[in-house]
Length: 157
Image 1 (cartoon, rainbow, N blue to C red):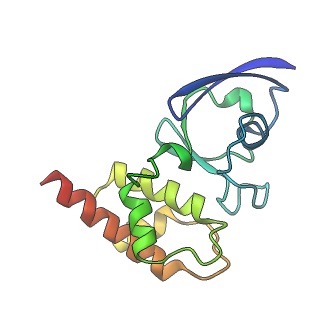
Image 2 (cartoon, one colour):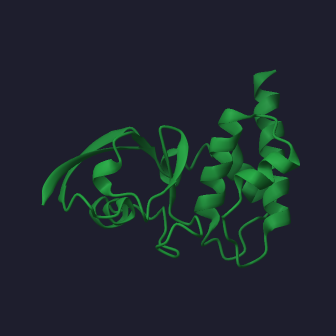
């Protein structure tokens, strides 16, 4: 066991865990966060996605000791009173069918729109390569990302 410091959603946490424990387990079991979610455990589905220093990572395969950057979870991108534009667009487009995978799609969308506030359809599709949605909400997700991009652009004008 080792003392590991994690910076999650603007707060620093010290936890005593095995350094090779997957970050996902530390976030869920040690810090009690509901998101990210366990999906495949192999970094293939994206349900476990968090942002580290603004870049999406699959928390199920990253050792907790390697999570040295600022981590942002779905819980930390907004408040219940003021959803992130991506979250609001997912609501407006009625994206979640079952909602299990939505964590990954939203976190990748947030990262994409931070880098490129006016992505093309192809850029959106490339960003989402490797994410899985068994419900088949892909068209609604694409519409939601475009809607969020429009909302973000409207704020900046």
